[in-house]
Image (tube, rainbow, N blue to C red):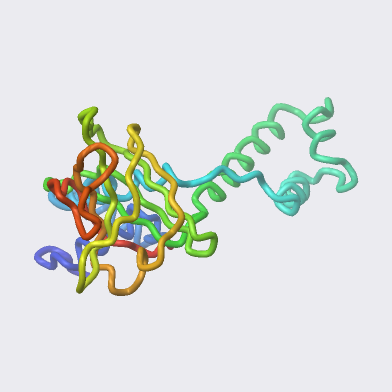
Length: 228
């Protein structure tokens, strides 16, 4: 496969590499290309800047009981012993303890990567630098906003989130707190197929005086993306 000169393919592979979708031989082959292709390495770094801030929204999860059973089976432990007895037992050598630690870390990392939301948007500035993350749980009808970039807001101003549809006026989704965070009820029309982009505007303190749209400059914007 030749990727030099194929910008669309290079961008697709860089995104899949950062997401972890490239595996085995395909991943090793891509890493070989990066070794001799500075532009490809830069493309990967750009995708890291876009996607890695999404980890801020991942909630920790405790390993389920069947994972603990699998750990006990792989280490040939007696199945009737609880995991707490296992951790407190004195019969394990240092090698077994190290193996368990490695397994637990692997399990924890895999579970932390599990998404707990179904829609996410990374709002960027004019230089494509991530500034805010927006996630939506359409089942629970909850929308959360989290600032990830350094974007100080004057005391007499507020940031306001908007859904911009293909037609009609922008729809206000809420005014952010002073720390750039907010949790809103997911309004009707916030995630519809007609929503082209989400946007953040700088408004007078408390929000736009115009219910039909922003009155201040639009600072950040980005589209909804369905979580993998």
